[in-house]
Length: 400
Image (cartoon, rainbow, N blue to C red; front, side, top):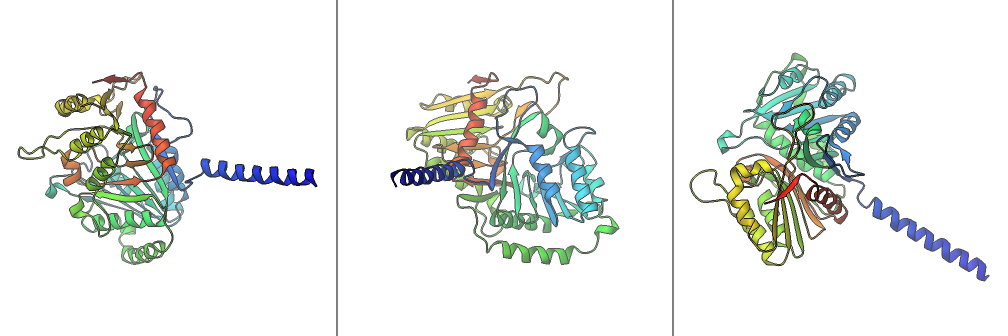
């Protein structure tokens, strides 16, 4: 009997260990951290999938709809965005997936004619939205698949963002987050202007919109992932129930007690207009340091053009360290608007984090459409921290 009891005891222990091990690896299978890494660098983190792979997977899984709100589209033949565009066209023409694409009015057509070309494809409709009335732009980078999957992050719909720029995003499988993203999209879509609508696209959108709203309401009834909150800017133009980004991330920073790690493309307190500087984030970082948190701030070297004074002032504060990142030129030659750190995220106390599309300067919060996620999931924050530490300790950084 002793031997039988021992066998049962060890079996139970083994099962429990297996369960806990499984849970530790797959604690949040519905939230995935995704990154783009400039080729010819050592910034890739094992286990973190590439933006291109995840976008392709999501688009290829679509069976009903894809709604995309992007700053602009920039494709080059044979480069990394081309398979994404081909996948969208296949989804629309082969599987009859209804696709809506919303881009910024100012940057429409700046880089390529892809928006116009896409608008001529069966089941694809394209609009532009103008945020200049708020002294801003449509700067968000997100999309929703089948009202169930969402992608939010810093990567523009640009081949450079997939190949030559450091970007961070989150793929989320959650009905409530998807419904929130759809509510933002619907609000902006209604305020947008038609680009070119092919005859094959001119009918059916009202019926489809009604169907989508029904599906969104159904999705809201399902339990969502605890620890995720959808945020957007500017708060004055958010749908009901979507908090503004600035107040939420300030609250997260104010909760810091041991550490704050921030990676950002641009940082400045310079005002959009007038002489009153934008101090909300700067003061929050200083408060975190005063509370004893060790603050590490990573910015692309390009940020020094407008934020040098602010960054040097922060670097002089006890408990705050600032480093700039310079990505080496590609062996194939110089590329404009590339080879840089474009990520926008932070981690607080190894457990709380934020991923979004706002650069840390005033206009991105007060006049530009941006979307992000506040995350209270330790495993997701741990993954983001691994990415941050990889950049922080890389040979591309320099102490300010």
